[in-house]
Length: 102
Image (cartoon, rainbow, N blue to C red; front, side, top):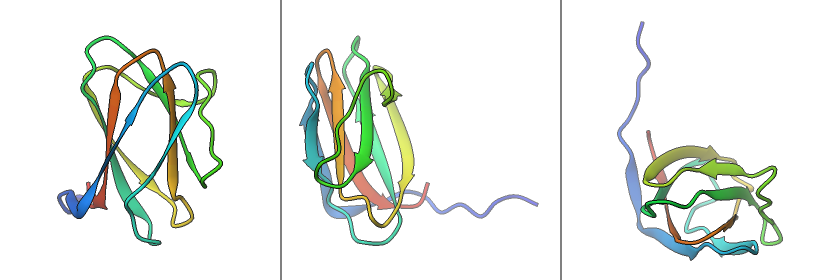
């Protein structure tokens, strides 16, 4: 039997962006306290970013962060306690959209 998946529905004003550099940068997510899907988009053509989710003091480290490959979109489910995302990499911008669904 197949899974019941609902299409991704972004929240109103649910997109934030974060410039990526060689030091960890944090951005507050536009999400509610419920578990949500976070769509991470990397339009950069040639730079890998590494991300971590957590509270306002979260830090990303290239050695242990989740890699976001150039030119990709990744849908991730985050816990209700997650309020921020940190990113580190060589260059570019990540767009982070909160919503529901896949």
